[in-house]
Image (tube, rainbow, N blue to C red; front, side, top):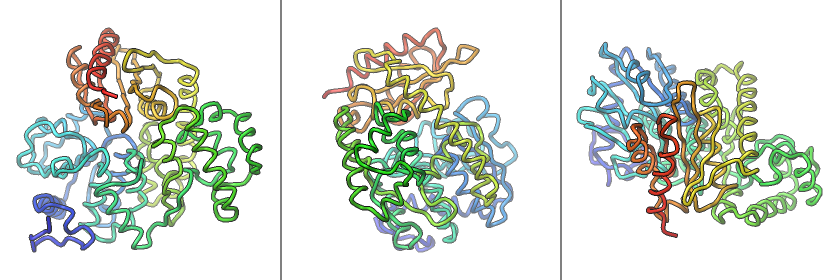
Length: 461
């Protein structure tokens, strides 16, 4: 629907994409922030949340706005205790849709989330794309909405395009190609010459042997994490292990094509779904600045959140380049933890029921990453994967992941996690393709049994 509200200045590239009431919500949110002296920001701790916060903070830094930023892992007592009671404007980034009824001063609240909305959102300035007919798992995430908000506020915020890409990649909204609002924003960024696009494997620019050994997407069964497997691959293709993929891309297109084809075929030969294998060679977005590869920046933002150092990513976004060494170390440490767990999954260290599989990890922050990678590249392509961790008090955090193939055949992990958790006295929810739950350890087995039964009833291959 074309915008007919003359009071709202909507750029031509977005005009017609957003319905009038969504434009009005953005306008009200921008006016609220412009008139606010104290702003409270609460963001989710993952790569999407850290990137969204980075984008908003960059705007406030430019506008010299006073703000206070905190990160939370979920809607719990910590979240509730952070809600302002002094009339400050509240921004909720990549979180809050399930906690609307807990918010007291809704008229001072802007929701920039993309999870299913639960509760009465009257008076709230709700920018959640789900409420305006969009798919919150593919077309827009928390970062998307935060970025759109800032460029509508001030066009200079287009300089935050690296963090938009980082957040959408962290939320896996680039998989299979960008869609919806994400696609519109990426296409406009290319037109503005802010980014360039290359089609290839998702490698950063390190020596190729190191890239393949550390690769988790695509994860190569029998090769990832193994020096011998990497050497055999490169020897087969007669590729110098010290050359970088980007150098090959620029100087030896035949070798690049050979490597691309080899890896796609390798994935297919190891049972990876065709749409996932083919997506290993996809558009990659090259940035202008200290970090050229958007995948690497996304990896940094995600590692910051998962390792409890969210402020590190935000400080870097604000211009503190001294953080780069710490970012690199953090990303490397997180990445090695994930590979360690993936190798365990590859060796069969998980339990398989009729319709789901599940495994345990010590660190809850990596369960989602391990689940998402494993379900695509290692475990049964017809079974969603549940990762869980147990703390010292017997609290279990569950992270589940499916695939688009499973969604097309009926999978809805939102329903599964919410219902199974509630049936054992816990709480759960999220997206149809990626959901979580919090339960007690004595109910873990029952939770998995209920989830298995529900998935069995949902899936029809």
